[in-house]
Structures are given as structure tokens and as C-alpha cells.
Image (tube, rainbow, N blue to C red; front, side, top):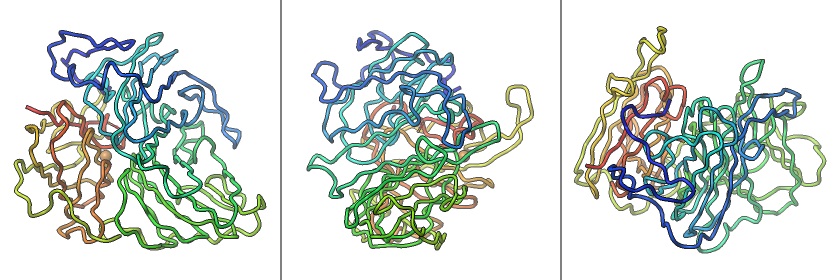
Length: 446
Ligand code: C2O
Ligand code: CU
């Protein structure tokens, strides 16, 4: 459960803001009156989906699709999304992962709203202030809901016009739970997806990791630049090839490349890819598979040393109003009456984890240490984090802004952000199994 014990949820069902709840997030809504620039309706429903491999999965979908419909809007647009729940018994919400929306639009069941139960609706309204690659997903029993398919891409195109690339392809990597265990998949299929792209065409590949584990990807057959991380542009990205791209669970990376006159293949380390392979994205110049490029998982891409330095509104030398420490660990504990692995923040599991308090406009620093044996992708809602250092070494390349930062076993990060979005925000591991096993807390404005 994502619910927060003892907190009354609020509804602004069918567009009506509930008054008098007494909780401050009720006032932190998006613009209630104006005519929206974009209007979407998403219906959550159970569907049996047959994957391309022939495996049938009992999926929970938006509009019967896996992933859900791609929402594409322009920066600055007022976006209105009506969520309908047809038959998801546990209830559904919509969280706009990575996009900083007002707190009451953040879609966290039990914190910013009640879960939307079968037969009910909820209307979200927010201005899409940041361009970039984001995604939406349910935030009610999210470890199960997201794994079963309640997610989709949210792309915000820059105000200045479309991205420079001619072709814009969103790739969600997901692991479907099927009868024979987890199955790696790209987009809605668990088989090689093919697209024909004319040589010389510029392409933006928007990679989104919607599963619980760190994804190791390689793009073979072309050089490319990593032009954005978690929705923020990289400054001065230089060309790369055969790098292993480590994508945090919940994280995004935009690649830019020019289609060569030979095939290009995007593969995950977890699945067979390529000739007769079961998963991946294949771009061909002529619709012919021809001879596929060799897939080499080369040196790991390092966002801390990529691109050119640039000015940031604050940095390692700033004077911080808050200086917090967060330690991730694991221990055996009691969960649902069973002895199970519990994940902890500063020694405690949710809901006993410490809440981190800030005041509006505080400059906040966190030192995050991972003492456990697992990767923990840290996701803070409502804010963008500037990475200051990793394992004692300052970031030397482009400023590295993140909202979903993978902290590997034994690693230590320093991050900073401006507390500029009042409310109560989730701060949790985006391995959603870990989150439901305790690795969750809140950032709250006092
Ligand atoms: Cu993508 Cu709290 O979630
Ligand atoms: Cu974790």
C-alpha cells in the first residue's frame, strides 16, 4: 500500500476541488478555471494481453494498451487528464513521474488524494512547465499496478518548437510478469520491434525504464549523443558508441543519432537481442533485417563525467539551509506476518521512517549512502536534484540533474535541490518492491 496511515485523503472528483479538508495540499492544485490546451481521458481496466511471443499476461492497462497511450504536450500547456477506473479493484491514481506539478496533482494515494475506485473518476490539471521525457503511472499499490502495466509515456515538447530530430521514438523497457517468470520487453511487445527509417534521418530515442531493476542497454550500429537525462538537457554532449547505458528504474535518457545506411539495434543485457532474439528495437534503412550490427556492452556511460560544465543556480560551495543524511540498508523484519527482507532508510522501514522537513525556498543538501547489497534508485517527487558528487568525486561534466538517481551498493552521493514546491512529497526507492517493503519516506514543508 502506498497509503499513509492516519491521513485523510482528499478528492476533487470530476474537477471539483474539495474544500475544508484542513490539509494544506488541498490548496496546492493546478489552475482550476482555464480552458486546457490538452485534454486526455485514460481508462484503467483489466485486459488479457497477448505478447508477441505468444505469452498471455493478465495486465492492468490504460485504454487496453501496453504501455498506455503516449501523452504528448507542449511546454507551458495547461494539461487536463481525466482518470477513469473501470475495474481495478485496488483503485488507481496517476503520478506524473519526474514532472514537477502542484502537490495536489501529484497522484499519490493516501497522501495527495484517495485512490480512484472502480466506477469513479478523478481530474488532474497542471501546467507542463518542463520540457523533456517523463512518464505516468499509478501510485496506488504501485508495486503491483506498475508491474502489471498501469503506465505510459509523457513527453513535453520544448516551448521553442519540436526537438531538432526529425523522428521521435519513445522506448519503454519493461519486465512483464508471465507464467514463466519475468520477461524483458520493449514497449508493448516482448519481441524485436522494427521500424524503417531512411538513412540520414535524425532520430531522438527516448528511453524510459518502467521496471523495478537497473536496465543495462546498448545501442549498436551507430554513434549517438546522450542529449537528456531525466528530462533535463545535457550541456555539450559528445558522441559515444557501444557504451553500456545504465538506466535507473524509473529513469529516462534521450539519445540523439543519425540513421546510417545499415541497421541499428537497441538491446538490453537481460534479454536475447538481434537475430532471432526476443526483445529490442531494430531500426533498418530499408525494412530488410540484413546483417545486424554486433552488440558489444562496452564501458559504462558515466553521467558524472559527460558533457561540458556549465553554471548552476547552486552547487557544492553553496550555503545550505538543510543538510540531511540518508542511509539505505536492508534487514530481516516482519511483513504481513512473515519474516521477510525489509528495506530501511536510516534504520527504519515505512511508515516509521523519518520525515525530512524543509521550509519553502530552503537550499537542501542530502548525503545518500547505500549500505545494502542492492541498487536503490532514489526518486523524489516534485523536485529536480542536482548531483554534486559521487563517492567523494565532484561531477566534472555537464550539470547532472536527476529525479531518479540510482545508488549502487556501497555508493555515496551528495545531491542538492531548492525547496520550491510546497506540499508533502514522496521520497522513495523506485524499485517499487523495495518501496513497498519499507524504503519510502516523505519530504514535507513546514
Ligand atoms: Cu514513479 Cu513515487 O513514483
Ligand atoms: Cu531499493
